[in-house]
Length: 442
Image (cartoon, rainbow, N blue to C red; front, top):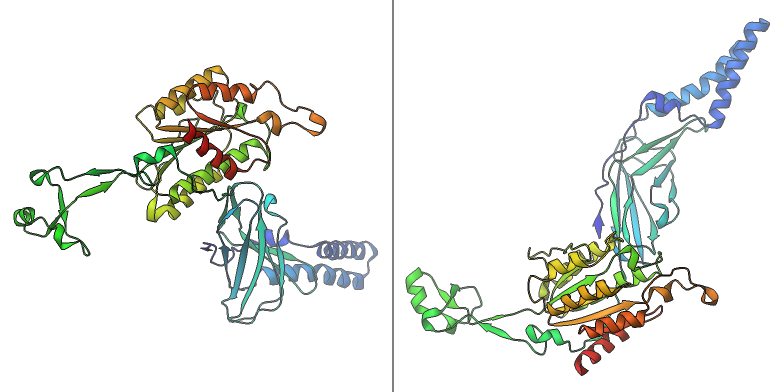
């Protein structure tokens, strides 16, 4: 739940802004009054002048009264939740409080929302007593990922005669984050688990011998049998042995965002499937204790909370998953021609498990993928068949020039990847299980 920073009172405009708030009725009365005054001068009719002055004074008095209105209204906005998957709804709750000693008139409450989230919500609030409170709510929904501003909140005041309407705005804006949909995946045995957590976990001994012990300070709950008395005597405080330190399995999720690799746009495009797939696998591996890094073809590596360029799993996996999903919520197509920038990041050492989502690949980019494979313990590639995604009714092709998916699979498998084709309608859970089976049989 997000307590939006939209608390406060609306900003007041100047007198010129108030005159600009005249309605059609108010402008008509003012024009009729000026016309009557002009006719009284031409015709010499004093009574007609009094009528004209009355007609012109009424809207001007309404403008002055509204401009000097001293309503003190506090408003706030709450999102529940502030982060939602694509196609899911979030409830927005608006709270208005009259903090003045005078009751208000009829108020129209309006919140500004992007067009993609739906129509602009409007509410009519009856007279709010001094110290009174009103709450209204509405729902927003988007099929497209992104970060969307909500606000500023606006109040519209009007006089009883309908001569003038003034809009006063709050200043603060809240943000709704629409993240990719995360699909639950089956727990399968992966080749990259041999280097860390999982069924094949390994441990590195920090204790090479009695003289090579690396002690640390005693913490509440430590086993007293692990106290190292020699170090305790040396440092003057209780010290315990660091006997074993687990090595976390590492995984890099590579997302190919090149515009030339993913034809088509929209929530049902191949690119959006790849983004959702990367989110699902990254979250799944985080929950299994992997240390996950997100990498794109541009070479940008998403830094994690540990500052080492990866999101740590384990007990903080929920927070890490949220940060990763926020990053994927705003990822867009890149203008890169190839994958060389991503390889430059990977060639620093063995990265454990490598899971990639590829679009179109030619022989040159397949060669780069082959070099990536050498830098990983195991490599799984999901190759999206963009031609199938862009094929219209009757088999009409709206995009061409791509390397056939069968050829891309051949190049990747020859380089040692466990490569699977992805077509519209394929379930990631089935592909994930098939990838594990192929990797185990290889």
